[in-house]
Length: 314
Ligand code: G3H
Ligand code: 13P
Ligand code: ZN
Image 1 (cartoon, rainbow, N blue to C red):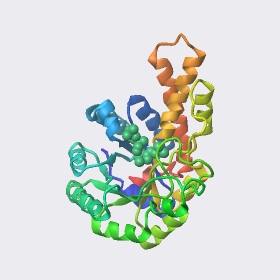
Image 2 (image 1 turned 90 degrees about the vertical axis):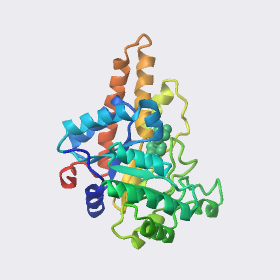
Image 3 (image 1 turned 30 degrees about the vertical axis):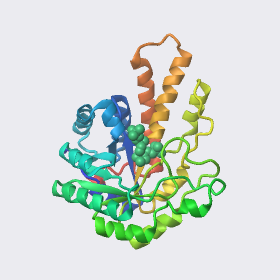
Image 4 (image 1 turned 135 degrees about the horizontal axis):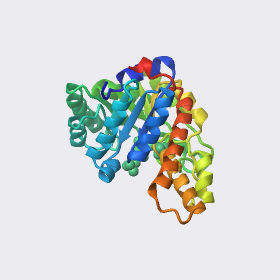
């Protein structure tokens, strides 16, 4: 079996109250760590590639690595997804390059323009059997003590607009702004997600899969290791895992994770360098980094409740 779309995965995730992990890949070690985890846990998987990843590693290398992963794991449904495509052209190119899912992120454009761009991608992608994720609203934290709640709420996805957007654009899934943000500094005080917004959208769009970006948890284990071994991330804070699990039981069918992968790899490399200053064999620090990613992803699959769900998503 080759790469699959997210269609069946999202159907099953919605119906059975779990979410699929969408992990960003930038090199062989990150990809292998993720693949080893999902192969052992028999979980469906989305591997996603950003513009930064394409610029760093090149599409052909990343595609070749993913092709090997797919070939070696015929019992696991794997989707290759474009993360944050910002133009119609790049999305079309990725459809041509063999992606089975693309994201058109036109959320920074006015509502009508976002619909128009998304619609254009949907028409091209669907004609080639590829699914489309779109985005409405703007990611950011909800911090009552930083900005007026009204200001911040204005960036969250509006449920009525979401309904109109999905109807007019024809997208297959929608990334929503519910209080998460990208990176390792998501909240300045108490982490807070707008579950009422998820509920509101779910009511208007029953059965429709939603996506949560910026969903790393900034795990204490790796934050502590980074800070202990010469790093400086004292105020890093992510989305609590209970909140991820709660969202997974709702309409959130795809949960995006990149920062936690970066931190796992960085923590282990820092640890090796600190404990063995003479080490200069990349296999001796990338290897432990890959192992840490594997263990971290295995843990995530239980948080997302998708471990053991590969077969039902085929
Ligand atoms: O959405 C953001 C992801 O973490 C990808 O980040 O563009 O630096 O690869 P990147
Ligand atoms: P994190 O930075 O929380 O890992 O989010 C990644 C993401 O949303 C990629 O699209
Ligand atoms: Zn994102």
